[in-house]
Image 1 (spheres, helix red, strand yellow):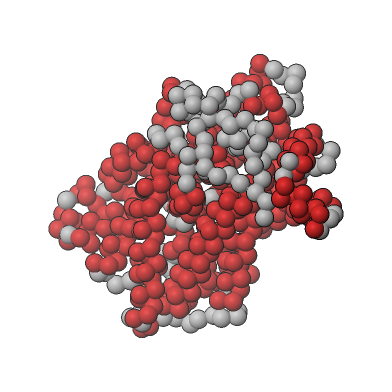
Image 2: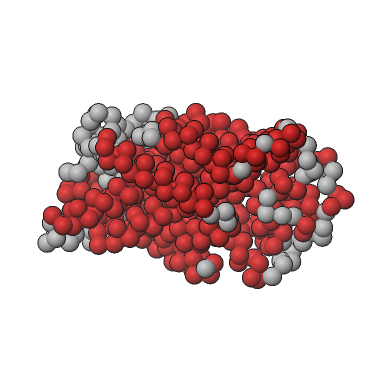
Length: 469
């Protein structure tokens, strides 16, 4: 398999430092979250057979969306990939809408993490010490939201996604404990007395099934951080980046199916939205709640990273609109002129220190205020899952690739010319042509199929969004 190089392409910003395993860890941590605990409930509403099929199908479509992003990134200069950059060369007039949707989605998820911390920590403290109930502030959710914000703040000010790899490892260890806990209770069979009826083929109802789809779709969403992974990974060949997608989505799908099946078989239709809360109070269940807190705490900065980039892109779009209103379709080169110079103070995002600090502070303060005043997590997740997740996972990647890979697109023509130039100097490709012949026609056929599938992905995203709203 030929791995396309980036010969002839400029490298922009601090890129190419992240390892393959670091990229997988950060992407997997972005995928896995507290949503894994809701998978057994989704299975109870759909039935085991249909539920597993939807879980696997959702993972497949989410993975294809990530793969499409890796293809889109190859039309941009190395290290400058982003939703904003793609929208500037595909749908420039809608760039502000796309990035606003991404910012709102990530902002909403961050708020949900803070709400989870505030809801769980009083129970965690009482689980470790019954006397804590007599200390008022220890069972006050606002106290814990405030306290954990002090831990989250310095992590949110890190510029590079790769800098969060160690906290992501800790978060994944927490996920591992939760999975082991659910499987262990299933194997022990200590929940049989409380177990309800089990649906294998039949579902609860069409409405209940449709209401669970946003939770599953939301559970696979990590596309907001994919471009950062592509910008920072050391080896960005197509094979290498695709393997990151396969490893991340494959691991997440396995864990989702495992927890969904064992959790549902443990409680049947009596299952609740948070399976950990259904286990009898014990040290293991208290540690599980603490693990959830650690998980969401270290996942919060992974939402701030794309939210900050999208807010910055929206502000830049407005500024360029005022300064050059006559140019309604910025060229690829025009965008690249705004990209940071290699090694510019190590700022891979192109933001100055003041701008970076201001945007990050605004995100932190606003999310803190909302988390302190709002305690309904279900409404936030339902809206985010049915709108923001479908847009980022399916609609935007599909539309971007369909537009940019059009044979009439100047960006595609330039990309194809660079491919042809590389093929002329590749001995491996010469050998392929001698042995098989017609390699160019086969490549064109595959790209045409991929382009049609990308459009189908966008249509699928619209259907899912409309169905789930």
